[in-house]
Image 1 (tube, rainbow, N blue to C red):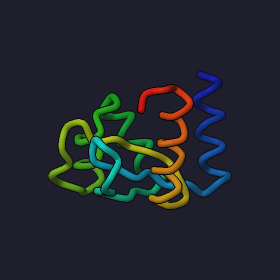
Image 2: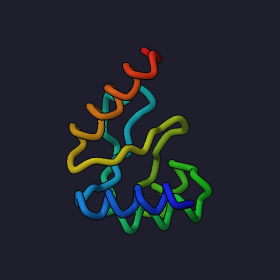
Image 3: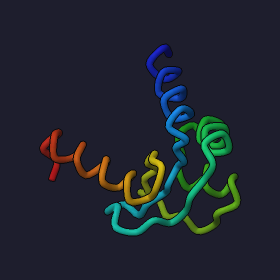
Length: 89
């Protein structure tokens, strides 16, 4: 619980937004304000397409990924660096 609060505080300080990408993180499908996204994703129990629909974006496919950043490019790059560190790509 404490870690999630710290993450929310960090996103707020950095003025980050949520960006929804296709499953391969090659195309950004939507951009959402932090407060709106946090409420929607929490209400939907982590369901990205459902949270996106709650925020007004229809047609987000299953397998879509929600990533945080100040820009879509930053969010995707951070995700790719994380994948490399984890050895998943």
